[in-house]
Image (cartoon, rainbow, N blue to C red; front, top):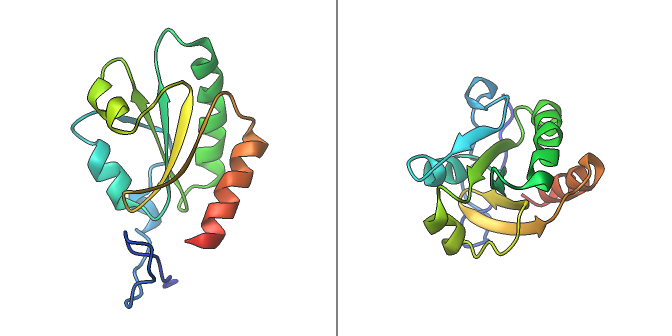
Length: 135
């Protein structure tokens, strides 16, 4: 088992060696998020990606197969979730989502970065790879 040192929520390095959740606990797909499971999801993983989307958004539908592919590539390293902004306006407002599709990257609840608009798998991989080096 590999032990990794991660950053705490305030950005400092933790004194203990936290373990990443065992891979059986990592989702192998983009988890459907809502008000009941959103906070738990972003708090649980060293790196999680949340896709803020809406059913009427054509570009958002373009992102679905890309996230599916990325969740396979990064299984056991990154957790992916999707949050319907129409059904979860309070969360969208809390994170100041002004345009969709919007990808937000979290590490143990701390928002690291975000990007708006359709992105290629390669563009998203670049962001993820950069963040994985830092956490």
